[in-house]
Length: 546
Ligand code: NAD
Image (tube, rainbow, N blue to C red; front, side, top):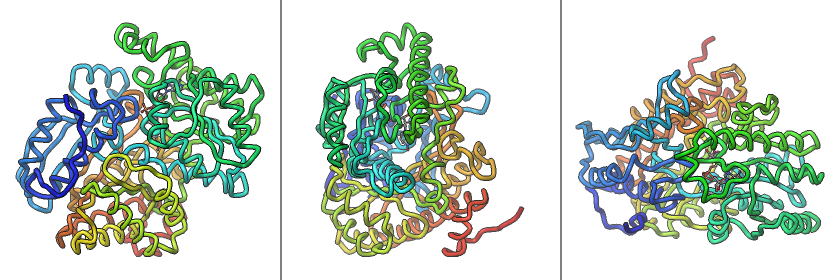
């Protein structure tokens, strides 16, 4: 079958730009994905559609869809078209939602096998994935935050150890070098290492630990940034570093540790062994993966004891280690609580825009606008300057930037006006990560140790999705966890299209104000002072009760 890439240019295959935009976003997640043949986009198993017949049916439907109709998708499969009205979402989705007691990995794998649901990741089935760059500013801000908290503001001369160079983990080497550090990334797959080198996310590669450490040591001595991909298994390399008494400054991991069948590769396994093991020895594979994760996490805890800053980067590695006997796995901090919560409390989070024309110049024009219009916002101007110089284009040209309440709306309205006035070559789609202030409940990632103990309450993402539908967004999704995330999370996603029309101003303004407005209130309700301040500064209508 021919490889799928997103359409470029101004020719419409659909009945309007809103529908065309969503179709290009779907194609774009596959263009940027890790394993197109299996419709897998990232995070081990996160898929764009249920199967190929569903994919083709979605494409066909989007081409036929009228502006006053809504396509309903259940776990990546199109179910029907309903007559709604022109201010309704064009697409609503629910992916991988199982009721409480049934939300287990075993049930997920069984239902997936029967073809009844998929794990959609946060951005795969929601058609919002933009490649490794999708988490790059988040990873960079984590490193910057650690620099401020622990290293006098700079990571020059500091050594970061991590693992996993997949769809999302692939952002780590570039984020590390942008932060000025020497970063060692352990990865079991040669193919993934080569892919990140080719994409200019990773600088050097080796299969020798000694050589890797030599390069890191030289960079640390000279205070220079370097990224090194080491072919190896994290479950072997992390304990080996402990054994040798080598203590990195910062330690994390972004392998797909959440999934013991399709994600984490146990020590002693070759990539080629996995397919057969998944079919014929699932229990053994899970057990071996769990045991390897336990070994790796014990090493992480030992490195922490010896002075390294160690954190979980959102892959459930602590939960799996705990399940496999590491009682104190949760002594390791989660990145959201340790480094990013003050930003989330103001609803500042990962906001993305995609140039649907395929023209890189559209992203550059928007960069210029941001540098001028947000010149007092140091986080964003610093990031845009770095990104425009160093972040490669993946798929349709896109950018991610951490914007908060009011600023997202300001940017989107300005972009819609630029489309209207012909200052951009074509329309632009906006989305944000599901890992955003109002839109995610995950008691071991986003909402761990909330001030009021509301970690596991999933009302917020559900309210968020309903509010975004009421606010006239173009696409709204509700996702829960699959694979090893089953039972761990619920989140909501939203996509908006700036097609230049005046009526799109209404969608953009209402949805973006309400999306981040609810985010601020979620944290205000939980007792965060930053949120209460944001409520006052930005005139958000909070009903403050006890
Ligand atoms: P992926 O499946 O595309 O890549 C995982 C990589 O880890 C693969 O390249 C695999 O070969 C490698 N790997 C597996 N076991 C290994 C081992 N034992 N040693 C060394 N390498 C090993 O997944 P991804 O999209 O990169 O996501 C990685 C994890 O991060 C997932 O759990 C995902 O859910 C999580 N995630 C976190 C955030 C966040 O905001 N922090 C965002 C997105 C994804």
